[in-house]
Image (tube, rainbow, N blue to C red):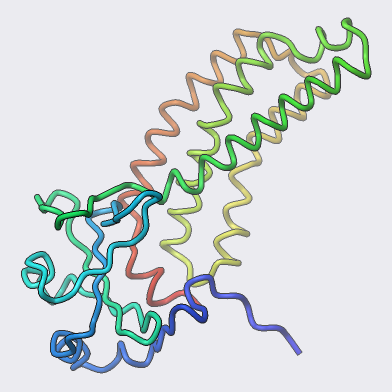
Length: 241
């Protein structure tokens, strides 16, 4: 018997109750329920509070909640037994955050920073092992100026591109497994670069590293911009299996 696929948007902390979204009166029921809590997003930025930041849970008494149009509401489910509704505001809307809260862009950094930091640490350990277990001649041939430039400059750029690809694909599929399988194609150019160097097809010089960095910078900018245009929070929250 096939095991059900894990759903990272549901759990003991959040009951999705997808069937409640099909009720045409759910918006009126949410407004009428004084216990309903609201989380707010403006574009891709989230309304947060505290340090470290956590989602700010608002009540219907907040002016920001009272002024929200019904079309901006998405029923997330029941959080710890309380109805929770997302208010999705347009990115260009001027919105004053309630006292003690602020809008922060959290999603890209939360996915990117750990991967970049772990990669840099792994690279440092690799260089240290080379220095300990081999001679200086091996280290000088492996850890070249081009390698160092590509490693430190391109790692965050490649991570940003990978996050953008994953975000764009996530907006067009219905589950995490499909998104992950399709996103793997994004590493093929990188694998080709590594295999090309290992097979002796080209030498990873400073010039090659500079050219690669120059290509990746606009690609990272364009992919991030494209992912932001394609990103559909409501699709992921309400349709993913």
